[in-house]
Length: 600
Image (cartoon, rainbow, N blue to C red; front, side, top):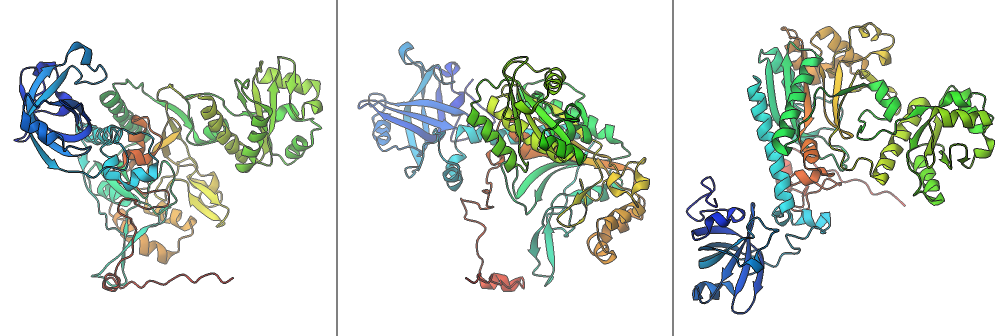
């Protein structure tokens, strides 16, 4: 029972958390860290910990005087190797909270393998601030929480590999030292010592290499890929991260979706013992924006956005009248229960809307089926009140939040408020997992700051056949064969059917503002490969870290990465990034130019 052949070595015969009543009467050898020591004078108790859990050691001078003497010098986090006999605890000392709580090990031989300083926090303390945890990551990683998180990530990778092997995929690695091929985020650049003045770029994704493997006849490939993007960080984003990348030849969108839904089923079954129903729900991009204000909607709760412009077509309310005259829209969400909202909470919602970019927000609290409470209630016509109540099926304690603005803008703002309200009211708690595919994205979006087109996904996404002819004169109306998979309001993957026609690919580059020289410098090798026959192909990249985060019920991506960076891109443990010597700079022909200080 306690014997573990896989982990058995000359130093240990069992793991700490595996010792149980089946071992009573046996001698075991254990190794681990001291989690806690309790000196009761005649007896010394030690909780020994490894990655499987705790077991109680007993040092009794009547059992072994030498071991008891050595145990007097034991401190928390010392590393021990012990040998002892497993005994059943007395009924009054059984610990039902421990897997090993029915037994204890009377130690007859002990070796203090390594002594430890007093740690800055207890390994079982869950209230340590994150910066301290990251600084002492080697201690934080010992905690049951982090052991569980990283082992969940490992199971994701293990099960993913098995699934793809079972489905005929070949695992192929692609370069880390690659070429700068701007695809959205800023590249991390690596100077080359043996090619002076030249730079590698760390891959933002293995996108082009995946496609070239399709050109090369590999048919189905996957990769657990390390990716690097020099972008601003947040709770679900890191400078370096892991993607589950796949690419398939001679496929349509449905083939990719089927493969990924099968993978999700296996991961949730094998890791969480949860049966996931397929096929997943589908939303086209326009519907997702209109109903939820985002292309990554959380479907664990409703609170959808509704267009109420028609109710106020003849309104004399100044803001509504002004908006409708500009052909803009009036939209709202309905919060089911506002009974816990004071007037200050409602005023705070107005400030929140302004923070998100709204000119303001109108709230209406439903006192009963006929009476509305709002700062602008006195301006409502009786017919408007009736249409609001009937059209939105309002009832007592509902709260209507209204924004009047440009169509997409007010949807996006209400979408953010929708998420805030769901968190405040706990609407997503204990609601399980809700997947949705968002499909039929526009091919381009307009960058107002730069005054040019950007790819909605990336430049290698195939336009749809029925909108392809609009590339020349109406590019913003061109749709793409792109698809995102969303889980509980987080995009965990995105993909598309790729361009396999060199003329279309060149046209896309041109529409994105790339000159012929730039196209040749950045993508010449890729276009050359396209000239030799490329199959119809497509793929997807899943954020492995985000997926692990969801499987672990976590909200911060740093919880599933062993050595993450902070929001400012710093590793607290190693203090990187750091300066390097002048000699190192000279070897790669790099000179540091100090920023000029702003003059007063």
